[in-house]
Length: 300
Ligand code: TXA
Ligand code: MG
Image (tube, rainbow, N blue to C red):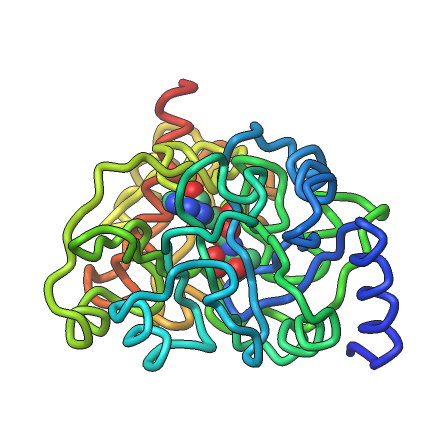
């Protein structure tokens, strides 16, 4: 549980340029003052993330996103439908937004999270919080406070807001160009966005979250449409195996990263993850699973 006094302590840390891990409805974020370049550098250092990757600016429901970026009519329409919630919009930046936040791009990613603890923190802080997922670079995103502690150690204050309700990172739409583009699938699916703003394009702008290898466990990961058959085949070859079975889509997304972490710690030879049905959030689940599997096929 998070107390008012925890929020006050967290705000004091943030104002002093330190970092705080905050719960959001998607995954936990490693937050720092978005107007403080030193805090942003600290985020990169703590995550072990290469510099030059842009980070998302999180805003409270009462904040004015126009102070951070150009909220054109497309952006306005999407915010009316989906904020607060698991949607990040890429818009043209305002000049005062630090290069450390934008990765030197002329755009900035903005999101108003719906998690009540994130909202309480943002409301009390009063400014924008830059926050990538609170994991070491390239590892599985955290969906619980203890995941953050396991990854980043005891030096970071973690606000424990319970398990993340969505479980995978926000949908990212670039609305800074003539035609809106889907950069990362998430819980708010393409059809829901398209019903608001018409057909989405596919961007060829490379973004770090779209690296082929990302979100990866240590154990080799096999994606499968028939996990039990694959289990029998691999066990017959003498390999030890753990299976992450598909469930109802929302539950599958919510449990995905926690289950990957748990199964990764078992020390088996191979993890088998059952692919989700390719609809709605299932597309986002399969996107994350294929990134998690790619690293291993490169390494092997
Ligand atoms: O759900 C989420 O979005 C979580 C929570 C904490 O809010 N955050 C998150 O942050 O996933 P991160 O840094 O792990 O992923 C942010 C993604 C990256 O792929 C980054 O390239 C992209 O957002 N991004 C941020 N600003 C961008 C920009 N100006 N242009 C293009 N992509 C951008
Ligand atoms: Mg991340």
